Image (cartoon, rainbow, N blue to C red; front, side, top):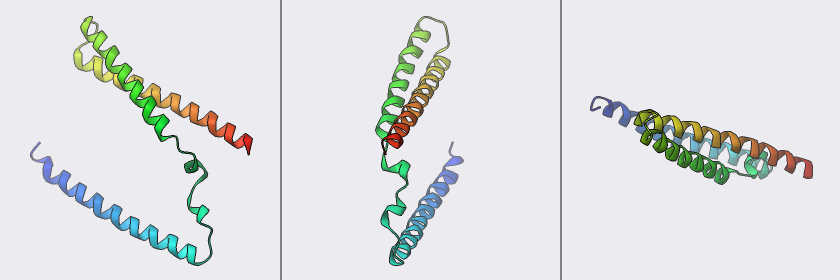
Length: 116
């Protein structure tokens, strides 16, 4: 673990510097486009106008909670080992929550598209 610390610290510093440089480059590009007369709505994608982040986080949290509960039940009844029960149920139901989110977002976007 100690051997990984310098690698992780270097990666974190590199990621921070890279993202900061990218931020300034994008800002310059956008300002140049605005100076040339581009519309500001050009920078907002239609998918990002309607954000479903709260739904995604909520369904993921519910899935993880259900996974923890079922993992505990599987462990306490002796059906599975502790680590396998918890990890498998958390990933299973967290994934189910994200899949449900995908289909709910897809239906909502289709409905919004039909309204316009």
